Length: 294
Image 1 (spheres, rainbow, N blue to C red):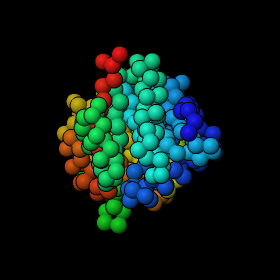
Image 2: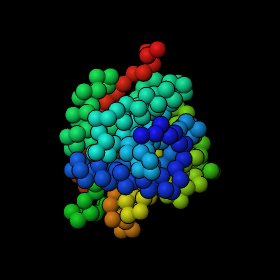
Image 3: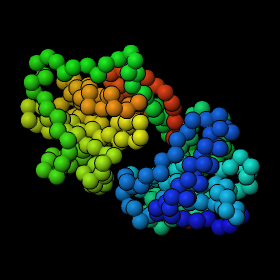
Image 4: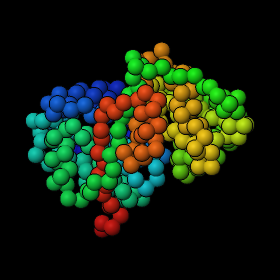
């Protein structure tokens, strides 16, 4: 077993190695966990996001850091079934933790597939981490629902626009408050302006920028993320109208439309249910504070 390899970007052969190992682990564990290889939303792309362990030319374990917010990193890790209980995760963890502390990242958030018994058991014995929250991946049921038309008196009061350089100031204002973001606003904006696989949308009510939404186009799947309405304009149905607009824009061209929602955000959860989304998968998150360690 060699040392830990750190990467900020992935050559194609390593990307393939990760996807192959991920498939092996999911099949062995009878799980459906996903692996996220894009660094587009990481606030500092100079921080290594990928940590790899090889035995000769075989990838036996990897750890990925997803860092959309300053000060914290989401951790996803997999080890080949034949190499578990050999300290692979600990080696990856120690290397990633050292990098995080050097870059002033204070919190690690472990991502655990709720359906994966191995993952649940592993995090149970990881005394450093405590359960924080869960997230539901919801899928729009196109067989039972239609996007729905924007009707009623409010229909004449709302309009929707793709995010562009021209309305980027409106975007900054809405995204910062509606999504409670700080420096991450610029990262999200940079990701949607030039990218063909990411789009951002603004919702205007009586010509006032009031809502924002993002979509990621990935092969046959559309993932809706970063959807929010300014607090002073909530309760008017603007969130539901925004969801309907996105569904109308995206439905028909791809097989699946999905969205993720924090289990504690009951308002958003019930909004998506009312729009035809159904829970497909649950992910649990556990947090570790590494700021106090010497």
